[in-house]
Structures are given as C-alpha cells and as structure tokens.
Image (cartoon, rainbow over all chains, first blue to last red; front, side, top):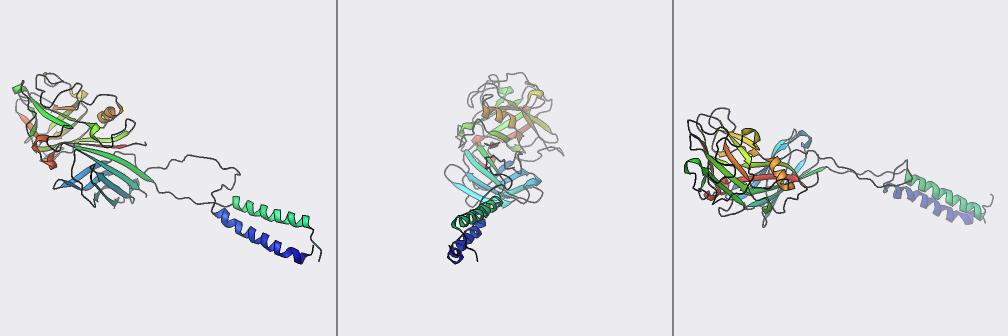
Length: 126
Length: 239
C-alpha cells in the first residue's frame, strides 16, 4: 500500500481523535477511577430551624406571609411562599436579608382565609 | 518513502482511538446545584364561626354546672372561687394535605387574640395538654377533664405558657394577637400518634387570686376572621 493511498484514512482517524475530547467534556467521569458507581449525596439546607410562618390578613384574605426565624446561613437566598386554601392559591417570593431574620412575601393572589390553609415555603440558595 | 503495511495502519488507528478514550476519562463535568429548604405549614383558623374543626369554650368555677361554648369570648381568670379556664382544640386532620405521621414538626404555635389585658400586672397563662375528651357545648367546670381543684394540674406539667398584662416588660402588653404559645412537642406527639389530640386547657398560673385577674380572648363564635384562634404548624416531610 502506498502512503498516499493511506493518507485519507489517517485524516479520518485524526478527525475522530480530535472530536473525542468534546464527548469527554460532556461526560461525568472521575479522573482517577475507571469505574462509575452510585452514590447518594445529601444537599445541605440553610436551616433546620422551626420557621415561624404567619399570615397577614386583609378583608378576610391572606395578602402576605411573614416568615421569621431565618438564620444568617439563609441570607441572600430567595424565599418562595405559596398559600393554598383548597380552592385558591397565591404565590410570591422575596430575598432573605443578609444576616437572616424575617422576610415578608406578598402574594400575587390573596386566598381567602379558610379553616385550613397550607403554606409551602422553599428557600433556594444562597 | 516506505510503505505502511495494512497491519501497521490498524495499530496506528487503535493507538489514536485509545488515546482519545484516555482523554475522555480525564475529562470532568462540573455539576452545580442550589440548596433548597422546603417547609410546609398548616394554619388552622377558627373560621367560619360554625366550623367544627376548632372548638373553644370557657368553664367557670362560679357557674360550675353551666356551659359557655357559645360565647364570643374566651376568659382566663384567677379569682377567689371564681376562676375561669379555657378549653381549646384543633382538628389536625383538617390540614390538607394531612400531616403525615412521619413528618418532623419544626414549630407549632397556638395564637389567641387578646381583647382585654390584665391591668397593672403580668400574669402567666399555662397550657396543659388535655388528657380526656370534652365537647364545646357540653363541658362545664364540674365536668372538665382536669377536675375542679384549682392550680391543678401543677405548673410543672404544663406544655407551654405565655404572659399577659399591661405591666412594663410583660410578654404581651396590648390587645391583639399574643406572641403565642409554643406547642411543638404536643403537636409532634399528636402527629406521630404518641398521644390523642384532645386539645389544651388554659389557666392562670396561680389560680385563686384575692384580686381578680382576667385576660379575655376572641372566641371562634365572634366570627371575626382577623381575631380567631389559630394553630400554626410548620413541618418537613424529609428531615
């Protein structure tokens, strides 16, 4: 076989090799191991404290929610609150002050006060 | 130039491929994830006034055989032979979704709207977990679960307490919602099935005062949404 005849095949191989690192960059592979195992990772919360969640009322509806007891570790995070009275749901979000403390979330829709209201609180970040 | 034999070409291809695979093992992926903290709160409010999910009443030593379940006020009073106590309960099953028995209760607060503040003093109001059933329209001083002896049960067995009075420095000095009583332990026990939810009895920490000391709170029957008794339970389902 002449080298000139082999040249197109070499070019193809080089192109394949050059493209491989792109595939590798998209993979999650440990550098030091040739095996991939399963693992459970606990994502830390900014607080496990008992948050005080109080509804602020106006004309028989829940217009906002004040969440207190937030530690400094939650400072700068976004607190999302959703109040659901079984028929109507209202949501909003607010940034937790640096240093923690309390934050008041104004709801986009104000659900009527019911015997039982559910309030879901999610603190995202920081 | 020398010719490359077909076998050698295959080896070269294999080496190049092998090298590229090795490069992929050396690659890394950066995974970023925001932490989040989910909490769920069930707020039970004594509304409407006809709801049966919340029951409240006052029992009076001075009218020991009468029931006051339809009154619009709840009264805790310390007085000579005229003490008054409040019985109050919330049906946790009304929460939707129901709080699972495996939930971890982070905070539970009982809130009452005070309409009359004891003047010039600071009185401690104790909460005791009721250990037997009672009904809003049936219970009287004589039939109450804790019996008729004053200052019973003893202060040391209380679940929680809060202070009221106009005296400077008192926990709750003005009309409005009190700062509330923390009943987390009781609610956790109710949720987990460790004890039955019969609600609470509230009494003055020292009954039988020579000078009458009275605190008054809005009852369910008042029908004012902004003043109703409330129980706020915050919990997580994944600790």
